[in-house]
Image 1 (tube, rainbow, N blue to C red):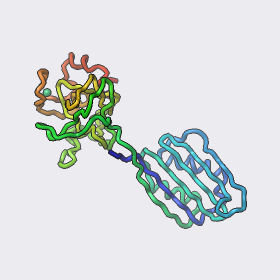
Image 2: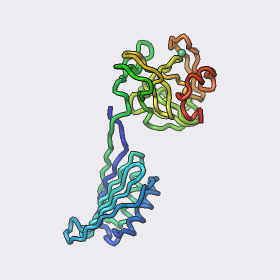
Image 3: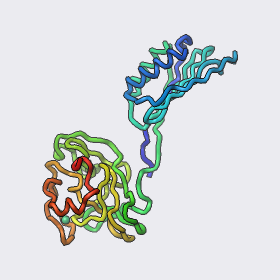
Image 4: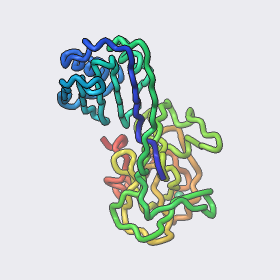
Length: 276
Ligand SMILES: [Zn+2]
């Protein structure tokens, strides 16, 4: 499954003022741009100058690493053109980036394209979504899974809500049922298969960090993959459980109600927001 991996803004500015292409100005541009679009710069920008008199070459090329990827600029003196790429897996305000760049290089016109980048979901290839006899859908092992393997990751959209019941839960998305809580007022859905993991009161997986479903034991082929929702949830959310395990607590209503012996059993598999 392919998931979104940020976006790349390809911005071409025409009719620029080439005096703006000096190293000093471009350093200033990168600092101000990164502040405006909330990007963290890593290291100094790298400059490369072409001093030929070839119209489509003469100018400056610059690369600035940012924490979430990079910014590349080509300033072409004779063509009065600046070619800018801003690529980040973290979302940024492209309109602010376009407006600021245009103003800074005093461009008369511009053209831009936004490209959505894609990568593989962080899903374990040995796991798949199958129809569940009782719970709609669920995650199942296609082949043996070993202790400590990452199953899937909640890596999607973040939702802010004071309490779980404030999150919409309408079909087909069922956002509330498909999200994991990771702070008192924050929830996250997955782009891949993580959202399909069902609850069990005797789970074979747990939560590591805040977003990762990780196996706590060996899992045999065709076994369902589950975690205990009280490893991460602690709001006004609750559900009646019919997991059929001998240890079934019947009502699942948040980490605060998880029995002490379960908290000990789940050690290292409870979301960090509840333990740190
Ligand atoms: Zn149960």
